[in-house]
Image (cartoon, rainbow, N blue to C red; front, side, top):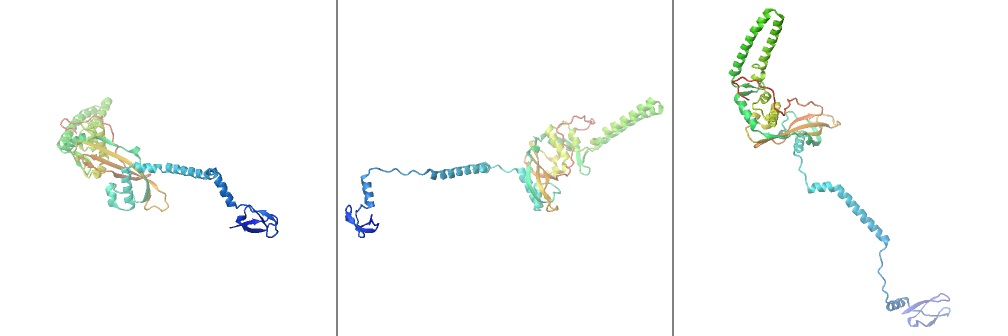
Length: 365
């Protein structure tokens, strides 16, 4: 094996045998002599064999660790923000909330209108003339306007039994009339004869010409006509409405049952369509539940211009339950913003305290 040397005098490079290590050799160019050194690899090997020192492992540089910690921090921060944003969705997935049945029915009703499916509309509503709409959005049920009503149907059923024995409903005039017409006729004749007798006395006072008698005669005539108008000839005696019969019921209906009956009296057509049978024919002794709710949605009219903004549509829904009867939620009215409310007699929640005028032979209602 040869060793490459560089002359210290002329700087010429030449080769010499490896057995000349430690001896002086002459430069073939200038003849200068120099000692042949040991090869570098041999020196390193000797040092390694003689040394007992074990170098420590190289520690990672702080500069290299800094980007790692920064990346880890950013990753943790991103995960934390993502968790906060997604938490409501995660919570809804873990604890799903069932859809509001009232909003479901209202959305079904509105969707059937936009798709022009009258069969679907009739399944969830009793609205005779539903609005023509092109689209809808933001269907919202306002629970603060819910009006639940609970009670026992027994007092109402018993009231209807007494009512049906004494009266029958006349659909042409929308009022009840007595089944036995002789009773009211006899009472009317008695009242007219009594009035006739009073008028004889009144006529005598008028004939006297005295100012005081004339004044008393005028008062007597007014009293006679008032008795006739409020007594035998009173409409609520001859052709009463359902509301009048409820208010004059003996014994009086309890407060919640009275409110239910008055609601029917003010909205007879709505109840007949909802129940698919006349309300007075219901015979039950168990509890009833009447639920009423309101929903608002933003709609665009079918015949409106394409650029017209959405307008509010107010829906009223109703559900009635009683011993095997469950009408389900039904839309009973649909009113655009600004349109007047349907006119209906208010249902008074408290029993009537007005005196009831009856003849001795008349049965209680």
